[in-house]
Each structure stands twice: as structure tokens, then as C-alpha cells.
Length: 131
Ligand SMILES: [Zn+2]
Ligand SMILES: [Zn+2]
Image (cartoon, rainbow, N blue to C red; front, side, top):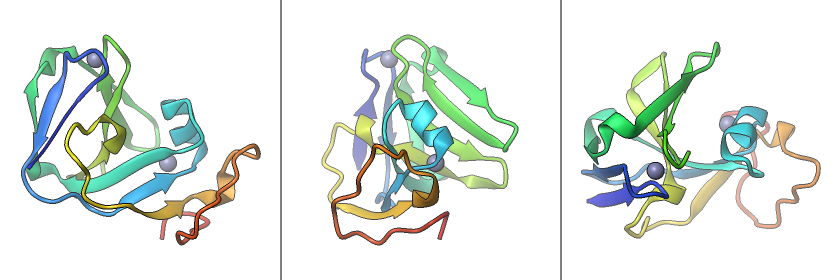
């Protein structure tokens, strides 16, 4: 089982079951949402993800792409993303995990739109978009 929380501690979640592969998404939306070079996400079954504290602190942003980003309304930590066309999966923002992820990153995705100031220096597979 995994546990995680936001920066201010208002929101806590748990995950029953394993994480999916850890992906580093370099798309322009993830860069905006994370304020960084890429977003570190792991797809997990929605049924295994549960908010155990601070549900009322969560806010969400729905983009016209059908992607909903859920974050703490107090500290802004991104928690999960969801897609309308994949309702059974949530994309965990693994930087909020408090327990060891148990795996290394698996791949870089959307490197076709990565920031020009970002240099990928590892040997992980790189996909121009979503594989
Ligand atoms: Zn918070
Ligand atoms: Zn992305």
C-alpha cells in the first residue's frame, strides 16, 4: 500500500495496489501545471486510489481536452489527473508520495514538446508523444 499527501498536509491519500509505470511527461500543459520541466506521473486504477483526509480541500481544473487536474486548494500540490475517456484510471503525481515508489522512472513522453532549456540526460526511452 502507498500513502501520500500534499505540501501543507491538508490532503492525504492511500493507494491499495501497485503503481503503474512512472512516466515523465514533458507536454506543455504538464509544464504549466507543475511549474517545472516535466510532470512525474504513474497511472493507477481509479478503484485503488482513495482520499483519506481533506477531500474538502481539493480543487480541480477541467481543460477543454477532457483532462481534469485535481490539486490541493490550499498549497497547490497537484495530486492526480483524470481523463474523461479513461474514467477507470487516475494519473498520480508521484512527487506527493510519502512511501517509496519502489521503481525508477520508465520513460519520457511528449518529448516533442519539451522545454528548450530542458536536457534529458538519462537513457530512458523517449516518446515524441504518448506511446
Ligand atoms: Zn495542501
Ligand atoms: Zn503531459
